[in-house]
Image (cartoon, rainbow, N blue to C red):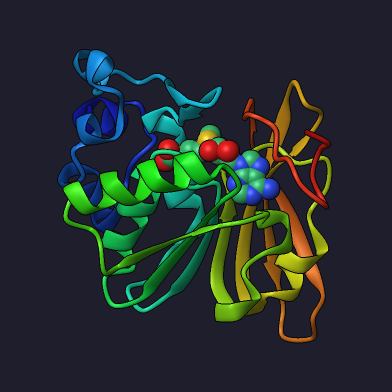
Length: 208
Ligand code: SAM
């Protein structure tokens, strides 16, 4: 899988490649889908949700430019796979992952434990459009569900010089946006790629 992602131009940074090599994706999908775990496709994980395709995890990790000591917030824990990969890149940092579906938050925690990433990733249940102020500010924030707008609390909880990656658009299709916050509090936004994510549901997201 990783060789294909490198050949496809999705992976280039040694730290990201190493992290994706080390996290066994088959531990994050339902047992009956294990045989498909290393194909480049999103897979169902229950509650109508999916674990993102590996190329999307690669694109997001590369675009976010995560450093070893970073404190990172993920909105949308799902299976816990993406958070595990990020925790190996931010190997001296902290990863907080917030999930609105309590059942999935439990699944994510169990998977993260099985993969040996527990202690480095904290899964929290709640509405991630409000961020997770308890551990703010964050060096990096990324959202793994499609939003109608950038939720203001996420920008507030981002450090100066921090980066926020979020799919923004309609319920059917979005643009993956990289928002950089500068020292004076201003932001610049760059489009990374067109994408299709499940909807972000919450106060600053879509209605359930
Ligand atoms: N990162 C996940 C992984 O590695 O498996 C994939 C996440 S899946 C594409 C999107 C997730 O966002 C779903 O689990 C969904 O329940 C969650 N979600 C949607 N709205 C949310 C919100 N407001 N706060 C937190 N999680 C939310």
